[in-house]
Amino acid sequence: MSWRDLRCGELRTEHIGTRVTVAGWTDTRRDHGGLVFIDLRDHTGKLQLVINPERAAEAAGIAHDIRNEFVLQAEGEVVARAPEAVNPGLPTGEVEIQVDRVTILSRSTPLPFQLDEENVDETLRLKYRWLDLRRDRMQRNFRLSHTVIAAIRRTMDDLGFIDVWTPSMTRGTPEGARDFLTPVRLQPGRFFALAQSPQLFKQLCMVGGIDRYYQIATCWRDEDLRADRQFEFRQLDLELAFAEQQDVLDVLEACVVASFEALGREAPARPFPRLTYPDAMARFGTDKPDLRFGLEIQDATGVTRGSEFGVFAGAPCVRFLVAPRAFSRTELSRLEDVAKQWGAKGLAYIVVDESGEVRSPIAKFLSEEELSAFSAEPGSTVLFGAGAEDVVARVLGGLRLHLGRELELMETGEELFHWVLDFPLFEQEDDGRWTFTHHPFTAPVAGVEEWDEANPAGVQGQHYDLIWNGWELGSGSIRVHDVEVQQRVFRTMGLSEEEAQSKFGFLLEALAMGAPPHGGFAMGIDRFIARMAGEADIRQVIAFPKIASGSDPLTGAPTPMPAEVLRELGIAALPTKDA
Ligand code: ASP
Image 1 (tube, rainbow, N blue to C red):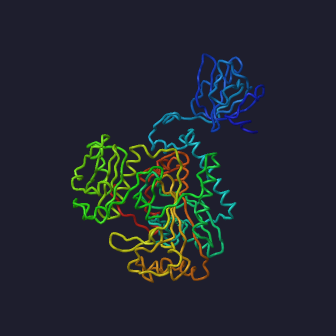
Image 2 (tube, rainbow, N blue to C red):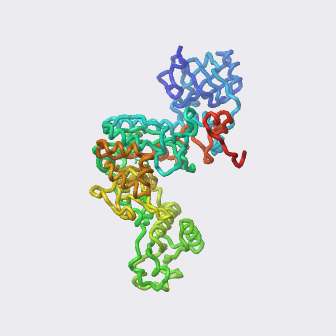
Image 3 (cartoon, rainbow, N blue to C red):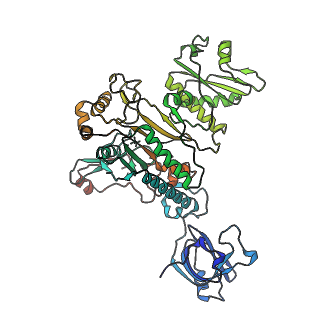
């Protein structure tokens, strides 16, 4: 027996005169004095059942019992709707089924929210995710997600990559987050870390002669949850041997283009534009600029060297951006708050009114040369950042984004993918120590094998990021494949030989046994799909996500564990604040 002859959204005029069996969820039931109309729904659409007590007395009796979300099976004859009853808004709107038999396959208790209700509290939606998933929006998102992932897998297959599974339970992988730990009953007191990424395993695949690896890998990172962050998420993780940067970028561009094409959308043109890291920082104040709008940051350090305005003259770096609007005092004070959030002490400005009149507390200190360098048109405002270069970049980068949003410069309808390249290999932490910019396995640019280990400023890495409309989609790099260089990176980060051996001894050994040159990338699949689906939050494209507190409202996890379970694992839980 089959439950249904066709799906709800598939009924058409060509079925008129045939008998069909259909099954689905009750979307609505309307009683019209004797006649009962039921909209039956599945993910393909809705069809109309008509139950006429004169035709099917038993079915009519059952129909009175039916409530929203009951699961039904119905059998009957497909007929044309009366002309005045045709619903042109529905693909099945010209026909209906005159029901002879209806069976309630499953009942539903009253619902915590209606499926067509807008603005349902998110925790409630996630607690009853099985209902939420029945909604159009969710069905659309998950089917889109499938289409994109299938297109990516096809592309990877066409390019000769093979899908290799790597362990989740491993040693900590240094991707810059905290690890989730898993105790081991057989070895009390010892823990696996859940992989923050398959980074080292994919490199070992390269050493193992699997020259094109990929995986849609689940990664675990103990970080605060945000719109683009969950504890567990998926990456398109890939690695290529005998590859240069260009080879890696080509693979990613092919995947992005294939995803757009699979959805029937216009794909971004290849090659994607490129920006160097120093350029991105100087012009946009961030390593993931949104290039859909201009508002570029400009440099004024040279021209303000001898300024009478002491703040400029004494600052190591002075930059500005010109907003296309003469801001009012209130607006300027709001912008100053934004600048302060990003670390500024204040916000110097020059407003040029529509009439050309200048309003600025600092203009009187500025020379003609300075003023002409800031070249503001009537109806605009020059906003300055002065101070340490990184702070100025951050402040003006923050202001630029804020203005992009406020002045509605961002939503141009364009899909802008671009690369940021040429990152520094190391960066300095607040305590003065040096650490990796991407991860410690990233190679320096070709030809650089040695550097001042005490001060590696200026050593450039072969690390690249993919950005979509200001969202970082992922990162990758050409890796170190020379054991000596790898040891040098560890030393520069302050790892002693023993520490490097104890944490990464297996990698060092592998690199010493015939490691090919290699490089790779990881792209956040959930981020990519969320954007593709027009969603601002990756929770909308993850079937069973966690809420911001890190809990799963559906199962109630995480939960405390009984003392005997912990004892078996060799763990003692300390009392918590709310215990
Ligand atoms: N493992 C890196 C990450 O997860 C990506 C890569 O370098 O391939 O960000």
